[in-house]
Length: 314
Image (cartoon, rainbow, N blue to C red; front, side, top):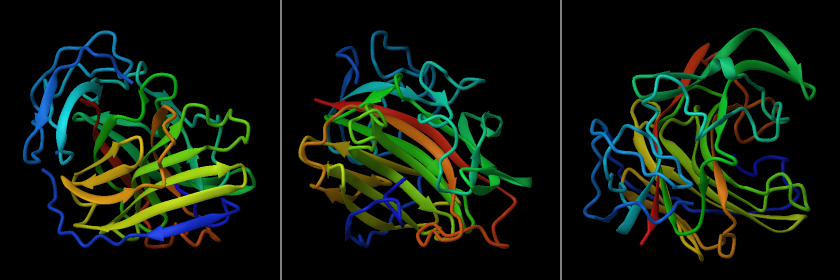
């Protein structure tokens, strides 16, 4: 979700513009997975099926590829599982519905409601829907309904893993589509703030051709360091794209559509296990990063997630 605007007391920003021509895609576990070696990046076939791998702390979808290959990240991996969103209803053994902090997020103009979620055609739909009447929460007028799913206590991820998402962002000023990771102790640590945050896909709907990928770390309760890359590409709102993060002990490496994009060494030492969040946010007046919705913002839009997959590096 990112340390933007007035959310943080201290912010050190390092921007890395990565000039890539990105092709649009047409795509903590146990030791029981099967090991595969990633060849030249290729999109996994989403129509094949897989058998569950019992005992993994990463839930395994009953559908999807038998042993999918990571799109982009080189090396040898063991597939742990994730979610292909091919069930008729949300898999509640993998996901919780709603924010892990309970209630609304006291920054944006969105209103989280479980009624907004949808599953159709093997895709998770996280909509933005303009409300007939605004609702107040945290002193903020909430003008759009959206939703969040998060895996705290269910799907646990961490260092030594590669995480991958196939996503399509919502388009329009103020609309904010995001796939990210927070530590399991958040918000229960001593500082009552997260010690790290990984933003694998952070997209502002007013800028369809860029995605933000970042790593936030906190050395003390009053210090937040942000290391980020604004990655150019094709329109992230008109088709699906594959994004990922390869999580090493001393750095994280991001990918978009099989291409390495942004690398952060500021993340060294932040290896506490975490959980995945998928949601929409809505900017509001005074937020100079996300910006507020305007008359050009559609009354309805959707953030789409085709799959979430997790591998362990061999």
